[in-house]
Image 1 (spheres, rainbow, N blue to C red):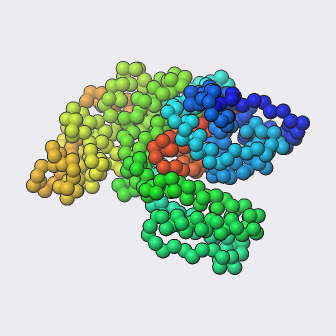
Image 2 (cartoon, rainbow, N blue to C red):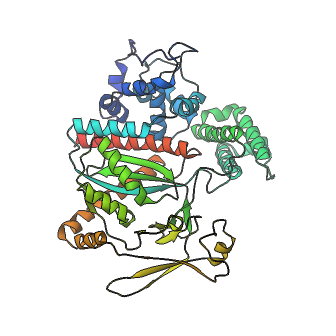
Length: 482
């Protein structure tokens, strides 16, 4: 049961916030900029109004999740810090003397139960775009598009490896306090079974918790909480040795990742549209969605800047029909042309190679045909893989010694785009694409977006939602300050 939106709390000590928290404090600025009551209105549908125990205020819970993203800390640590960090208390609308904290496990329940089936990503982007327009700092009619890659949490390592790595880091922190404590810690596990590793980690955390002198060391407690979160994840789902939602995408021919976040950003560097997909999805297929999401958020779009991944024919058709300029360099191998549906291979612009419907990447390419026109690029696949492929029927001819795939450009649309590329206007505007690469870097290096913090596509979408909202609000605050 939900009682109602978070109420203004009254305390005789409230003036402490004005004395302790400076005007330029990030959390104070966010509180003053954003009216979070929209969270209550949007999530009301996921609560009962008259049954069950009183639920924690959704605005409070949402703010806790934002703090996790802003400061990159665990559920346990974000709750614990709200006990003594005055900026946290202020942001959470707590009184300075308040010690009534939520249970950290309730944050997991909030993510899984209260935020399910919510189009929260579009909602929060729309909110930040509206704030930027109200403040007069978003006036651009151009969006820049790109995709950034995120490794799946368990894509590179098994759950067993993750647990042992975190246990190792915890032990090192304990040794730094007192090398002699090594004798009190449980013996390391040598079994290959995940269940045995979990049992070892439980013994380790219990032992550390029972050594009184370690409670005074913040680093030890952080590593302890980090390991406990991993144990809880694996107890919930022992089979989580690989993220089943993650799909292999390729940045180069021999590096892979689990997810992609497709972004549209204004020239003011405010993200105006986004989609989060599995790693194998083609960038070009998301372009029209990004444009439409940006328009729904309140953007007027006259121009789109991107790279060659977006130059497939259907996008050129779409932008011609909608009278939007498309600033991107044409890649002759992007266009699929009029091919049969079963033969629809997709081009991976990061690796510069085609990927077949069974997710196998070409191993090399060669160009042929006349230099002036009718040029053809042929992509060659590993025929030994093709012979064993479950999708070989209709694709690989039995007995063939090679498997190739050729593409060419024949469309007038491509010729028009190629001519546009040669104009001075195109060359000047194309230089602005660097800005979105800087935004991708900010997401990864300042907000931990290089690796998923949870498993599954839903978890990745939630991480993307909170990270994008955070970077947008920080950007708006910076523009207001300027």
